[in-house]
Length: 488
Image (cartoon, rainbow, N blue to C red; front, side, top):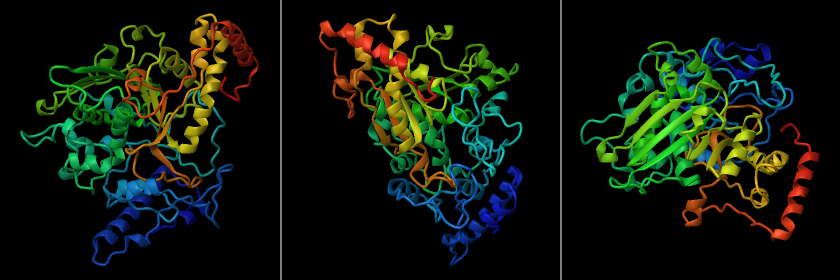
């Protein structure tokens, strides 16, 4: 196998070269996993450690290894769950092993490739990435490009796996899973069992997106639950999903929400730069074009034996950012807002979302790659609110303002439906996983007051009336004089 470190010493590889190397290594992994007496553990696909500041490789020593037992325990459940010597999970080698590593033409697995985990946005904060070893993404690739077709991929076309490895959405009579209210789906092991999938299925490498959304709605925000509804008392929920990118390539996979939430009608609207881009490219007869006609781009109904739940996915393509002032919001106010791998301090657009959800008490939760990153973002939330005080002073009464600024907790939790395995990067060894940690920013206060939530949304209450006006003036003064260190 070609040495990754030797390659880095000599040249910066192109995306095509990286794909070739990855497939060649995956073939060697296949031989070791299938031959009698094979030793797949002798292979090491760990990336070269690189300096976080300059991006140059650290070839003579590795970064300090931090124990990540919870992350590794999730990965070890799967036969394909290799942990490299530096603790990372070489996910692209596993995709190549299954023959689904690629860009356009690889069904649900299609990705832009390269090193960057997200698109570059016009409102991105922070320094420009000058990593000398950065591999560019596939030229011309567009998230959601399959929405430019006239119809969605079916299970076989989308997954490109053996039949037994696919979590199907359409079932022969009597072959569907048991109704979710009688199951206890709380992690990957229980989901695989419920879906009757063998652990060698790599489905978790994509399904972490819809199942993380399930985790946010059910266990973090608590706006619904598999056992909450019935045939006589259905529930309708309107969810706004902000910032999807690769998710646009596998919209049918969000049908899992309808399977997991019996007797529930789900309206899911997606917003973001990638959504805007693909809708603007939609032509007559394409799936994306339906958005311009205010029609859902995807619908699904679960089997009647599983509750007959419905899912309708809409794409908001008129604007790049979510904004409550948009005319289309008039009849589409959300019951909850969610986002995956959000980066609340990385994009200016988040400040308005954070403020809106606090003021309107709209349930809002996100995920982050790293717990440390989540903690930094939580620490910045009060600062975001304080920065808005001069604007809010003329629009809210004193009691409401003080309640808004009262102490709150923003619980950070380990996500049991995170993508299995530490991210394959050379600069970090602390737990860093796609959809790794959840943050509850604004909870569902109605349910929490009833004791349905395990986390407390803390408010110190409103002081006596004689002191409120003075306290608000002090808060406004602090807001006007403070520096937001890049948040403004």
